Image: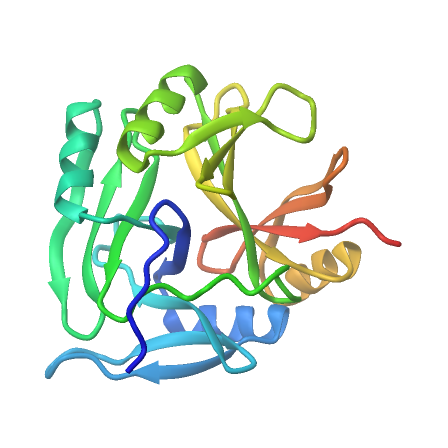
Length: 254
């Protein structure tokens, strides 16, 4: 019997809260080549569509609970104790939006907002966390970015909740990289004027220009067409047809 292992502090799951499951599945399936398989839930609950790259499940899709809520991607961080992490978030000026609660066959989870309402998930998985498998492949998630209206306060908040370390980012533009043990987890940036604090997750693509065109053909929108990040690669920000924002990442050629 294999031992259950966890990787506290790392992002271990992503989930799209969407207004239209079928439309979202069609968009992301065509854009990234994801194949969706239904995970059975408890009696009376609809199945949970899980996006796969090959045999690997990488993300889930859920119908958003209220019409007023916008569609959005949620990243889950592995924690040793969900209740303790929620308590730290509250003590640091954040709030609990959902849970903590136990989900059969999944684990204990919760959703928090930081002091400026940026949302992130917490997870203690019953099955353990997927072990990192080297560099992310095409269609897989690769990174998270936290854009904050108050980066200094965000440093303190997330370091307290998740125990993340901090070091200067590779771009050299003043950003900070959060780490968990030896792994880099996410970068922290100053939010653009007039934009709220938010988390953004990125997926690897092989050709950013072609991906942008495909987004438009599939009914999505290109929000930010290109940002060249020195020493890292090129990124873009898009919105799916239901309004969920997600990043695209293209590694340097050669």
